[in-house]
Length: 309
Image 1 (cartoon, rainbow, N blue to C red):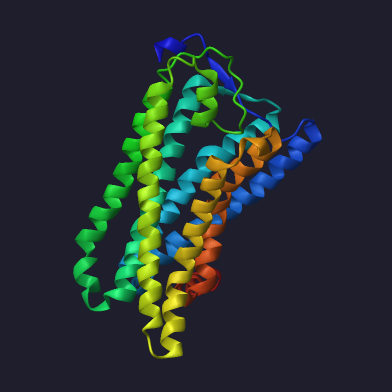
Image 2: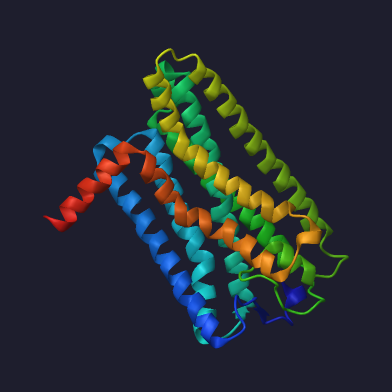
């Protein structure tokens, strides 16, 4: 980081130009943030309090909710503070911390979604071996591997990115610190190593995507072999929330990464980054609670305990 010691802060991109619109943005983001906090905290509390939800599927959902809480708390509060105080600045250290935690939580969340696809595969295709393949120890090891993968990915990228020399100012064309936009500020002869690291990460992410797709190919094949319509409907309802969450997560991230340069603009980049960094953590609780009867019953019981003790 000594190569960039002359940079003391970065300038983030604002969502609005005038103070009035910035205040409107603040209140909008505050509402989204509070909704995301409430939804994920309700799911965490419901799973923790209801012993019927102490199984692998909800254990991984519990991890996902913790990651969603951390992910949205990494990006949105700083943007809200900048809108409220009419500033764009983030310290150099703060930018590095934001990059680290966002990558850590984002990568771990993708790993958890991949593991949840395996959980759904075992549930539908190998139900007799469910507790053998997904015992408590195996679940803890898989969750630890997901968190560890996220930590290692974030550590490598953050250390590498913030060791580069910055030659092109300090204005980050994004509402939070994002590696591709920081690379644009670095000297062209010093970022090749980080580019290769990004390529390796993309290849690993593509491998997880292929695993999720193949898992659901096997799941849908198994569903077609179920003779009763009620059984097929139950199996589909079990998989639909995870399939919706994974599709939302992957589609927004892929569009943000692979959108054509001809479509690139400041406004579009802001909207796309908002979609992949803020939307999934905010709507995941809604997606899972709408189609899951056990979770809805647990949330209703939790509400009854709270309102009518």
